[in-house]
Length: 349
Image 1: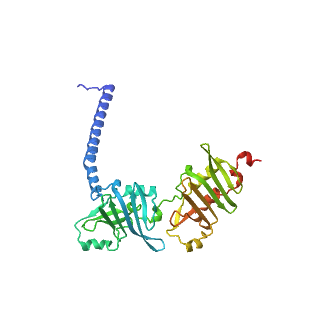
Image 2: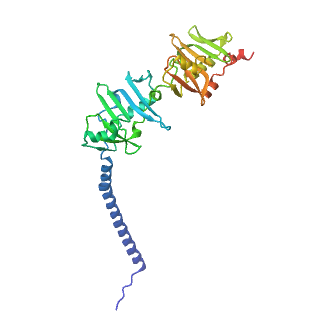
Image 3: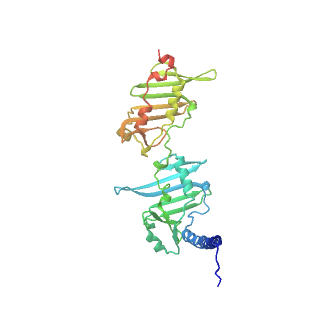
């Protein structure tokens, strides 16, 4: 009787081969499962997710938007409801608010609006609905109505129903002659559902710093007035009051740039009338600043002594309504003394 004796080194070799084969089989099986998942399951899931996800405004781009009119309800935390209507128009590449006030549009706000309108897309939709069914979704008293006018004069109406599946969604109707309702995330309309004060330009001064030839401050500590003098092609500044003297041009220009950089944080009201100015202390402002350009244009800002939660009431004749400016910014920026404007040699004497 013969007994085969397997040498240790052969047993190790056989074991290694078996392990390699098993590993390759396992890898092949995993590759097959992965291929099945990515070729069958993932496309099916994607198809489910994208089912009903449709562009609300196919063919519309930011470049052919000409006018946007938005009417919407704003429900505040104290159960008070505000109704707002805002109309904006685009002219020569710039957006302007034209109702309920006329003012330049905030570039950042309208950049977002221009991007968000073409990107409006539903999560799902309901088709083949009767007019009675459509009315049951709250379109008789919509939360918002958006009318978009294109460059060619065509208009598109978007209605967001007064009822929503949850507070995160709107039932949305595009044009009233359709039998399809879309379910759209409410946040996708957040850039549009804003009142005029939220989308108007918060800048106050529109005279470039290089064009300013006269600067005047009226403050509790006195009147400071400066004028630019051109001599032999160069410019210098003179202080007219509180003393007549040559002024440090760098100090004056710094104040001009700081003044032009002043902007409103928000607006207290659309309108401005004598009664309101008197009530807010703006009929007798605590201080003011006036810039005059070489071509005679004037920009001015008048600031009240009254504050509201860290902000000062203010107004500018060229800008509608009442502005709110941080008190700290005004206090730190406009504490003036004659010495800071005098040339260093003169101030040290």
